[in-house]
Structure formats: C-alpha cells, structure tokens
Image (cartoon, rainbow, N blue to C red; front, side, top):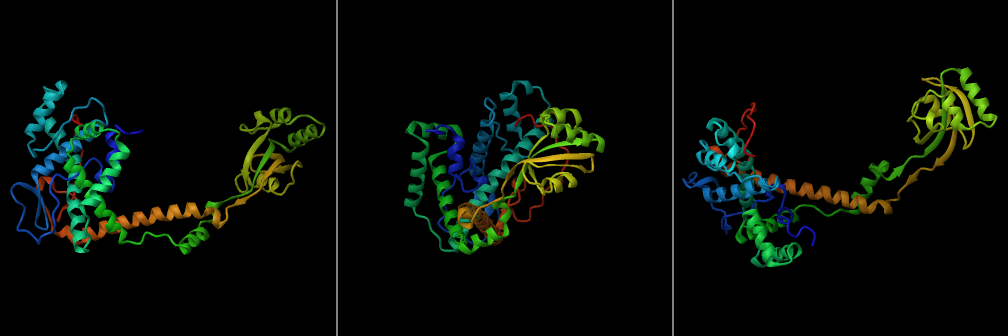
Length: 384
C-alpha cells in the first residue's frame, strides 16, 4: 500500500488544517469550557478561559514537532529546545549530539536554540490553543462528538494507511506520539468538521451559472493560425523573396536566404499557434485577414517587410455550461470550504482570543495582548 510506512502520510490525513501536521494533544479532552481563570498556573504555559495548557503537554509536543522536522533530513539529530530563556539543556544536547559543535560558544548555541524554539513553539502553541478554541466553540454551539465517531474515523484512516499493527506501532515510535494523542487529534478533526458544517458549503446551480458567465475565457480557446513568414529588411528583398516563392522555390530556401527573423528563418518560416493580437500589428492584420494557403505581401511592419502565408486555421472552441459544470463545481466547492474554515477560525478567535493568556516565552499570535517582536538580523542556525 503506497505510503503505508511514511509517518508524514498519516499525519496529513489525521489533521484538520496545515498547522495540525505532526501535532496532537497530550491532555484529556475537556468536557466543558470553564469561565475565565485567575491567571496562568505555575505548571502551565498558557490558559484558555480557565483551562491550563500544561508545560508537560507543551514539552511533549515540542518533541513531536522536533522529530517531524528532523525526519525531513535523514540523519539529522532531534534537538528539543524546551528550557527558555537560557536553554542550558538545549545547548548541552546540541554539543552531545553534534560533535562538530562541541566547542562552539554557548552564546552562539543559545541563539540557535532560541531560533529553533521560536519556530517550533509557535506551531505547538497554535495547535494546542486552537484545539481548545474549537472545543469551546463547539460547546457554545451545543455540538458534540461521540467516542464512537472518533473511533470510526480513526479506524478507517488506520486501515487505509497501515497493513499490520506493527506498522502503526512503528509510526507512533517514529513520530513520538501515543495512541491517546492520535485519538484526540481525530476528536478535534471531527469537531472541526461539524463546525464547518454550520457554514454554507453547498454549491448551487445559480452559483455555477454566475461563475461560468463571469469566466467565459476559462472555458474557451481563441482561433489560432499556423503561418509561414519571411521578414525581409527591405521592400526589394521582400519582392525578391516573393518572386522566388512564386517560381517554386521552397520556403526553407527562401526564408533562409531572405528572412531576418532569427526564430523562423531556419525552419522554413514556420510560426505556429499564433493568436490574434500576438504579433507585430502589420503581420497580425495580414495573417488574420488572409485565407489559407494564400501568399500575402510585402506588408510593411515595425521590423521590416513581411511575406505571410496561412498554412492552417485552428477554429475557436468553447465549452458549454454542461461541459464546464464539473470543474466549476469543484472550484466553487474548494472556495466555499476555504471560506468555511476561515469563518470558523474567525469566530473562534473572536470568542476566545481575549480569554487566552500565555506565559512570556511562549507567547505568539493566538495569545491575548501579543505583539510581534521587531525583526532583526539573526545568527546562522546550527541546530536545525
């Protein structure tokens, strides 16, 4: 089965959106979201409406994220920077796992650990926080997901991706995840799907008709013509070339002798698939007013004097609405799905961002009051 042993394959299938890739949840699903808490507990990195995200959960998923990143480059060590701001453990880990950096100054490695921490922690925090947001939003809308729904979705994906239990066990080992993690991810996925179902995602016939009317150029091709040309530098040369053709000399010989057009002189003057308006105005006018196999010219153009003969006319085509419906439906469905996802995220952010507090080193865009740091020149990362 193709992709059966690739950890990234099932990771993608088990995610709701891109930011869930290789991430899950280490904590137990909250049955309900409580009211605002009194702050961030000492053993937590954030608090969402009174529900703490533990440091243990964060560190676990930093490990998963680090393993995922390392897997992109076989042989790369797994560096997990989970001790900001000094990164003492991270520095020791780098020196141990990368002997060539054993004598590198701590300040340099601390900077590199900080860069890696920023990159990975933003992914981890985004997942953990949004997992809470979606659960909170579902509770607000009285949406529930049963254990049987989660089990069914998981069993289907597992059967598609793994032929044996050993392959699934290997996947867990390679990604650093647990069965509990995977099941929670599926639960969040099912919640997210039900949140999306509250949004308009059905494509109507009227929408298809409107799209077709507004994008007719996508479903038609203009007439094109195959030409043979000679572009001579003077009227005298053009007339000489015309006489040679009329006397039976080949286009190959005449174009090679008289034409100054480097793109066609060595191939018998052939210019294929020309669309009206594409060439020099004089050539364009002559080519699209001539009948097939009619020698036209000399015609004075911007770059000299043209002789032109139309060798073939390819008629314009146009798909009917019925022929285009399948493609249009797929396009609109994708757009509506994206709009639905954005609407769900916007609603969740509106309702829960103000109730999401994060401890300083872990703060990112999903945290209340977050301000992005000013960009600055960073050191060359050696740990990633």
